[in-house]
Length: 322
Length: 264
Image 1: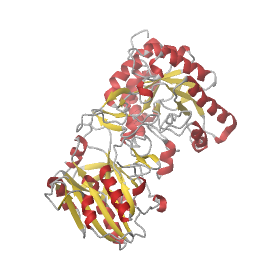
Image 2: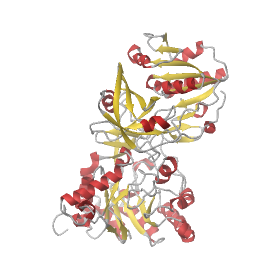
Image 3: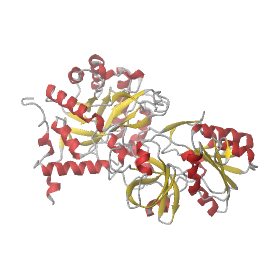
Image 4: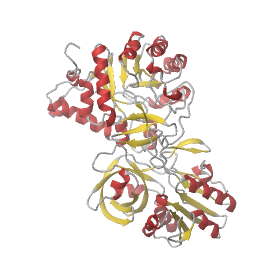
């Protein structure tokens, strides 16, 4: 065994054992679509430690009018608008995910606590009767932070509304409940605390930053929905700051850090800022090889720094006593 | 317009893996570059109308650029790049000896079987997939007529990149070929209703081709362009409006039945 493979990359996210810290950011890697369309065994080669599919809502959503994406300086802007076929379609698609070795964390969206509850209730019902024909659904990520629906005001800007959604879902499941926070607030910590007090097992942060791009020819908003969410390397320093703030305020709460992770070093930086797991988003758009490369780089970073376990890096950037 | 079922052809084979491909030829036509690369895997399976995702070299660009296959001959593929934004400008400046990372072939191709006669219509950079299409159609004995439209003489220089037996060119400023839009050329042609029209260009051009096809009783296909993030069906960033709803250019397209595209 080479020294590079001797690093222990395993992490535990609120009781969920992951073979390494990397997961996909919801909406950036559609495993079923990729496995269906492309030659190759994408189930066996699935690079992430858990699979977070695209956010599902109670009813189907058509999403925003095009154009929906474009590149920006060191990043990209998107306004998909939670396009998805609804929870019933996900229930029907679940058996197709059964070959997946890794656990699934279902990303759930909605406009009201009742809509989140409806999705989780339906999935719990399906999982209770589906048995071994279904993938291992380890939990839910509550996307209270999509900036591209309902005029841009998300539930996640309000601690009380976030708590309400969390309480409603918590009552329906014993699986992991992770609340995905928006960075579009003055201070993310009150929302983070509200989610945890309402029963969240962990927090994921950050979603995209509300932003706008103009068409250079017309000087009008480029995106069909006028505003969108900024992601990619441009947001990484802000995301690191926010993850560190939450980690210092809530040191016992497991965090999934994300925002512009393009390399293994980026991933390690989020861990140093207190994240247990790290989500890879926009980097998936650079090629399907990106997650495997980032994982190899993360392992090499640990070797170069003499870290026997990646978990040993957790929180080293935080202030003492945090 | 004669309606053609889009699923009449078997889905093209698609590969998402990235391959580093050596640039072995670059021909420049004003702001355009015709780039020839050694890409045996892609060339072997590619169908006209399919595209590749191309990484912009030197870092500094997050998203790959979707480029139509302009040619596929033996172990080589050709790409046609127009320098427009910063990313395409870097790609258009590529030199022989450099290498580009390509993923593909991706997307649906143009159906080419059982075509009595073909009329190819391209606008601006939308002309890119038409050489590969013409090569394939000619290979199966289909008679091909092509009409390409450009803004001005500068942009029309790219017409020199096309080896087509019956080629008509229009420019909006009249500096090359017929003055007017490419659809003005179509009005002058005597096109039998059995013809299949293949078009690729901006949506207003597709709309004009739709109107012409409806009047001429001709059916066909349109290849569409969109800003794209993943190129592999995951992100739903590249949707266009169709009679089947919002569909992804990278997955359900880039080739659609002409009459299903909602173009205004």
